[in-house]
Image (cartoon, rainbow, N blue to C red; front, side, top):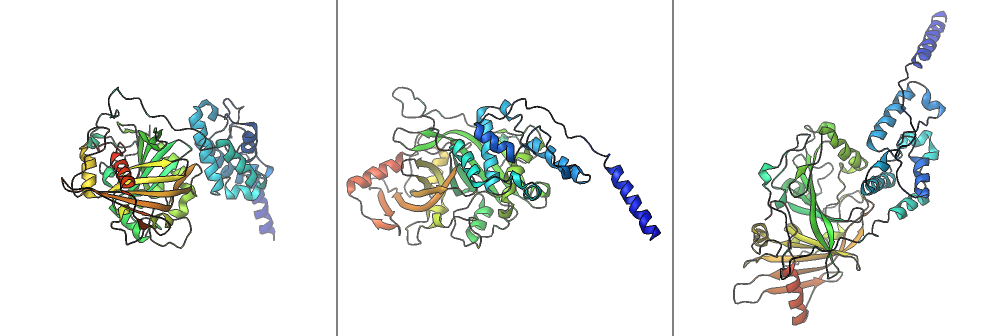
Length: 456
């Protein structure tokens, strides 16, 4: 008993001494607080400022070592990623982007941290508070950019100067640019109202095969994704089309090589000259931090359009892959040429092309900014889907049930091109009047390819 008493005393002394090992948690008044409505600020103040601000807010039990050390680490890490006391110094677009990410973290259950909520239940974001944040952001309220003015008498648009893909520099974390990304197959598309962009999500052969087979939990080593973004551009016919090229982001799966970054290599190249985004290797923390709520889906936000069956919900997009096997072609296996959105009907469409059509797109046989002159044997397919909200990203819309599939087959010289249309819930073939068929065929052939570095 005497030894036990001495041990207890020694433990108490050690515990008391440890309380003196208390590195500081810096605190200071807000110098550039996030610019938002008072309602939004009140929600953020209640649920986020304990970690994501320059204020020092600790409950009494947070101040007891060793818990204090863990709390301090979490606070400093959180401030580095997002600090609402300083966010106001950034441009309005950057502030709104940070709020969108915060809302997505909340609705995915990643923030506030579940471990934090166990001891700080008052920080929980209530459903009505989340609804208020979403209403404030209003992702579909901003109109897309108008089309650029063209020279008088010109039917072409200005496109950026060509860039040599082989000369693009690696990202600052060493991830090399992949010059083959433009030939990868589409896995899905996204209409992003949070930043007014349209996006293709492309996959290399390994990624496409895995998606078709449902072997994506986890994705296999060697899988690569390219997320290609363009600014939205409103055209005179009321459609929203890809405008100015914004960036391409790559995700490269290699569980061993990239074990410190969730098994993925990350890179982003911006602008038509494909300038690496990161100033140093630390930029990848943005990528991993954003994707961390999707750890259960191997850190991938995209729901690939596939017929593969997955036990979990919202992992793949089966409904958008509903075109039946009796179609004359399976366009989802082809390359993607361009896309557009019809805002009034909440539909999105992608123009696909078979190998002959894609060769014409790649060589730009029609001239800069114009649709190609498709050769004999080329087949185009325009798949139109209803849209639905992206369950993984507030502010995004993705394809839902297909509404129609239209084909144009290019005939030999002197022969008429063939147009076929399949529509309705079962995508049965329709027989449109000759005039209507000609109009639709002319429309499909007039769609210019979305500008892609190295495509032309």
